[in-house]
Length: 303
Image 1: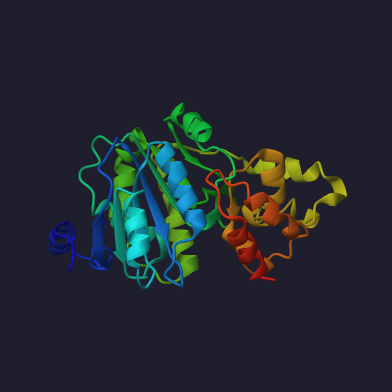
Image 2: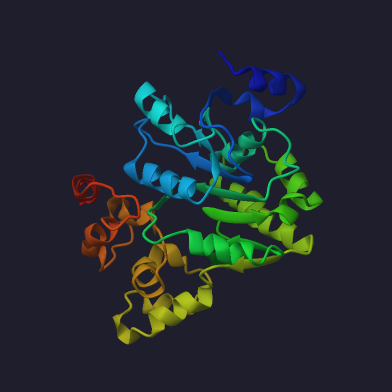
């Protein structure tokens, strides 16, 4: 049975986003006006210990979390645990990637009139490895900016969407609201990146907001150059297409205290990193402890 709020919204709103919502489960009462939309998918319909670690850190930073999961099913055990960390848990069909999940979160909340900040993030990152509160304090001190952790120059300049932070002035802007009203289901990933990941940054810039990366691309490149010939992908450092969280993850974590590692780095040792053997040591240092056995099984399973 669909939650009454979802049923009402589905009648009022046309389009595939609200219709993709299967159920909404109530969790913790709202405690403030800092909101997080968290998109998650797992092919085994599980919730990773790293997701729980991340959620706990966000709760400790005073976020009310709307957790949107597109796994085929959510078992009662995971659902109950999620409800102890999240304000709402939304289960929706696996269509449209993360932007559709984030868009669906707007449909299950009341007015945005008093929101002080909104974080949109997902489970594509493992951590956090360092405290997040100093980052949010830095971001809150410059509310005229739209923040991300990292930036990309691939295809067009934009903030990478696995972690985006919006102030109240950004949330209340016409450009922000217009963008999310127009989000629909996009099945082609490259089309999605152009329309939504790049598009969101572009629309906010056109509206007068400056984009800021907490870990600027130039700082990451400098950290890699300082290694001299020790950086594995040295021939890519001058390329604007370098995706730093995938190719520079070790330098970002060890030299710049970057708080996450992209899960794609771990899966199948996809980028053949010379530092792959250091992953277990690094990932065992999450802020909310993840068992050594789980970390090592995650890495071993990809070797």
